Amino acid sequence: MMDPFKGFGVTFSHMFRKVITTDYPFKPPVSAPRYHGRHILNRHPDGLEKCIGCELCAWACPADAIFVEGGDNTEDERYSPGERYAKNYQINYARCIFCGLCIEACPTRSLTMSNEYELARDNRQDLIFTKEQLLAPLLEGMSKPPHAMFLGDTEKDYYVGALENPGTSAGAERAPWSDAGTADAAGSAA
Ligand code: SF4
Ligand code: SF4
Image (cartoon, rainbow, N blue to C red; front, top):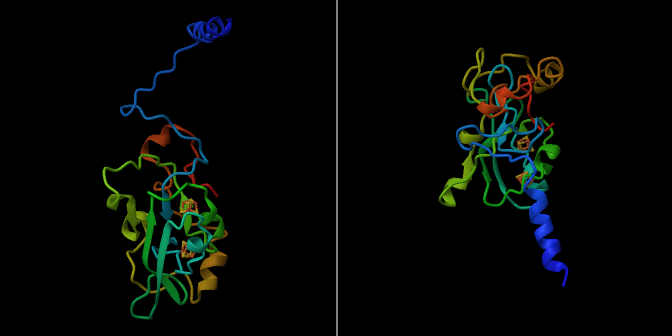
């Protein structure tokens, strides 16, 4: 008997609350700094790729959303420090649940997640992001691989040096609109 009045009471109580209207897509809301969005494959400061094609991210993924095919570096054609690189790398965003287990599994900090959340597409094929789409852009001072190791003689030099100079893709880790958010551009969900 009282249920309809209880229902109207809930509606009535909401009439006096502050209205929150988002002017999307013209003013997209700023995501939290550690928001789990689109992935990034980061680079070393000289432009070489951090990914070593180990597939640990793919094995960690509960949704089977990642495909990695490793390849061998040679002295004439080098994409990353060390022996191996990712010849082919794909993430299927029709499967990804943005849990972040893949970035926890990555031993080189190659894989991080950005704040970009506009991932809707009108067909499934476009939801499969290729390595070219996921790779961080080349910043000033970086050279496009393949090229030699400019920052050391061995891969160890790169990882020891990374403690002082992470060389991640500053600028790619956050969506453009989130510059209005925190001043810290390191938006990866580390
Ligand atoms: S965020 Fe989770 S579901 Fe998405 S690719 Fe990584 S491990 Fe897989
Ligand atoms: S992103 Fe990281 S875990 Fe995945 S293949 Fe590359 S190095 Fe390995």
